[in-house]
Every structure is written in C-alpha cells, then in structure tokens.
Amino acid sequence: MKIESGIFIGGTPLFLAFAIAYGLVTGWDEPVGVACLFLTAGLSIMIGAYLAFTARHIDARPEDNAYGEIAEGAGELGEFAPHSWWPLAISFSAAIVFAGAAIGFWLVAIGAVLMGLALVGWVFEFYRGEHAH
Image (cartoon, rainbow, N blue to C red):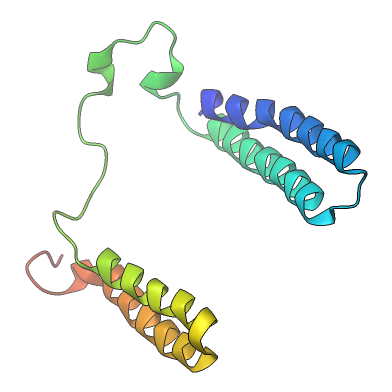
C-alpha cells in the first residue's frame, strides 16, 4: 500500500497547481471548477493519508517488495461471488433514480426504494440459497 499512498499523496500538489492555474486563467470568475479542483486535491490527500496509515498497520504485501517474485502473490485473494445478479439490479435502480431527476421526483422515490431492496439483496446474498454459509 506504500506505492498507492505515494501515488495519491504525490498527486495532491499537482491538483493544487491545476486549481491555482485554472483560477488564474479564468480570473477567479468561475468558482465551480476551482472549487472542484481544490476538493480533488483534498480528496487525494485524504485517500493517500488513509492508505499510508493502513500500510503502517498491516504486514507488507508482495507488491511492496521491490525484489518480490510473482509466485509470492499466488494463493487465495479473498471470497468473491461466483455469479451475482444484484449489481445489475442496483444499476437499473440507479438509472431510474437518475431518470427521475429529469422526469419527476416521484420516480426518484421509486428508484430509491428499488435500490434499497437491491442493496439489501446484495449484502445478504450469502445468507440464503445455494451459497449460504
């Protein structure tokens, strides 16, 4: 995680420079772009600091070793769903929510309810059915 934290922390000065340059070029008359670039710099430093904090509290990964071999990273990486339809249901619900922003807020409420149901289904996917444990 040291590499990832370095990438995010190293990007922060670049985003700050972009924000200042954008502000100077636009004469500070366009506040949304400047604010977004400053917020991007803030997000970059927050993510980098979190990754640096986490890297100090966990064991080094094979990716963190400059002389590491590919075989050191072999093995089980986690538990993944073999197949899941719930992300598709969440994406359709999100499409309904975003369409509701253009059509009417009554559709946003319907999409939000459907999205909540799909999210609950995805979270509790392994508590019932074929892959229950």
